[in-house]
Image (cartoon, one colour):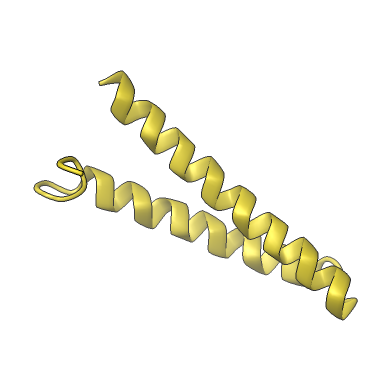
Length: 64
């Protein structure tokens, strides 16, 4: 049970971090601060929730 909880937490946090870093890099490149950061933070959050759904869906994700 601890392994599943740690996996869920790591996937949520890592998706948010990746989205934030991509948004910051694109904002710096295009000079659109803070809009792309906000957009990619939300995209990262959505990706984290999608990963959470995949892990917790019956018959999917747990056998990997």
